[in-house]
Amino acid sequence: MFRLAGVVVFGAAFIVLTRTVSSSDTFGTIMILVMLGATFVAINYAGPWVVRLIGVILSSTSRRASTLLAGRRLLDDPRSAWRTVAGVSMTGFVAGFIAMLAPTMSGAESEVVTVSVGVPAETSDDARSEIAESLPTNATLLPPDHESGEGELTFIHVDVEPDAALVDEVRTLLAGWSPASPPFATSDGRTSEALLFTDIRVGVTVVMSVSIVIAMVSAAISGASSVLDRRRTYALLHLSGTPMGVLNRARLAETMWPLAIMGGGSIGTGVILGLPIASEFNAVGVTTLLATIGLGVVGVIAASAISRPLLRSVMLNASPRPD
Image 1 (spheres, rainbow, N blue to C red):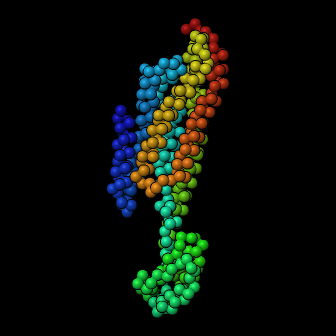
Image 2: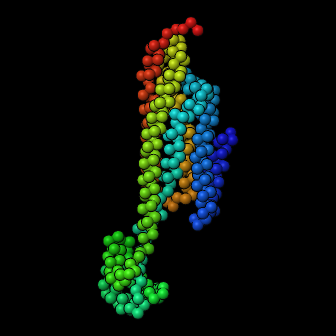
Image 3: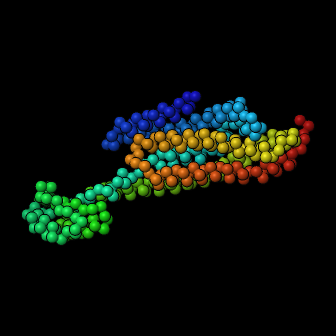
């Protein structure tokens, strides 16, 4: 039970820290990352225990032979069953966390962009007059009381509608008055943050895609090795009259129950941890999450189906033994 408690403790600590630590606190930020990593490790550590619990429940409540076989197998070797679904479950945790994150400039399209330029103080009046005559209709020159000074420069500010082409046009106009001090816009910082976030998202998506492929291969190898390790058991079940369909359904249940419970729990944990730092609903992230879930489930089912011919071969080659 303490294994599952570790997930709760580390996850709760992460949520508390995200709500109390400021972005300028370096140590606090490091602790947030540590708690996030600790939650990830705790889920992997709790996996075999949860799988064993699933086996106990299935063994005691099953009314079908296939479900009873699946429960007994999970109870007998929970670590092997967890290895089959661990890759998809841990990838789901990352996907659930990333799905809640959205760029901080997502609402910038409805804001006014201010473009500023620093001109020599002695020419600021002439600059204001000529800038006012040359501005496009969707741009507004702010009055002199909005001007600010820094050393020998006076900063003139122009409000522009949030249109990239219009911002560039105003920026070009203002640049002619201060070649040594290029104009800057309030949207520049948000654009840099959005680009950084986009790069991070692309990187995480690539990692998740590779992780899903690795998880599929791992599930296929685990399924094949499970058949080979239990070939004597399968042979005896076949000789006792157990249909192959029952064994295939048992193998599928042995995979899908841990995947549904641990995979769903990992995704839910990632979503819960991402909510405190989510700025708004992120449709792209949710789409990525759903795609990850779909690919993971399909991949594990396909990996389980790959070992069916091996199971058939083991059963058809079964023969009674003296022992």
